[in-house]
Length: 160
Image 1 (tube, rainbow, N blue to C red):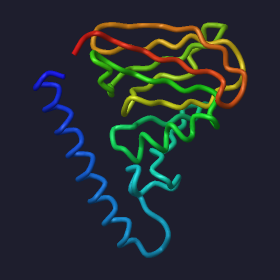
Image 2 (image 1 turned 60 degrees about the horizontal axis):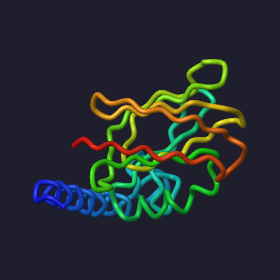
Image 3 (image 1 turned 90 degrees about the vertical axis):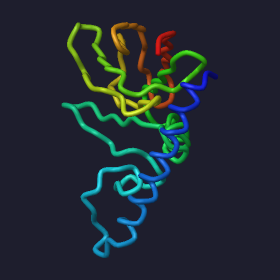
C-alpha cells in the first residue's frame, strides 16, 4: 500500500469512527423512539445497516465505510436479490460510484451513487445490466436476478 493510500484509509477510518461516536451519542439522547438521523447508527434498520432508500419500485442501500456497516451489509446480502461491490487498485474499497441498473427492455430501474463499497438492491426477478462508473471509466455487467442472495457483481478499477 502506498503512503498516500494508507493516509486516505486512515482518514476514512478516523472519520467513520468519529461519525459513529457522534451519531451514537445523538441516539442515546433520543427519548421518544424516533429519530430524523439518517446515518447508519441512528437509522430505523438497526444493526449498523445503512438507511434503506427508495427509487420508484426499487429499494436499495449502500455503504460499508465503517466496520459495523461492512459487517451489516455482508450479513444482509443473503436477503437482497442483487449485491454489488466496488474496489480500486490494490483492492481499495471505493465510494462515489455512479450506478445505473437497466432492465431487459432497456428501462432504467435505478440510478444513484454508492455511499461505500457495497450496495444491496431489491429488484423483481429478471435480466438486468448494471452500469458502474467511477471517475471517467464505466464498466457494465449483465446479471440475472432470481431471488434473494442469488445475483452478485463485483466491479474493479485500476485508477485512483
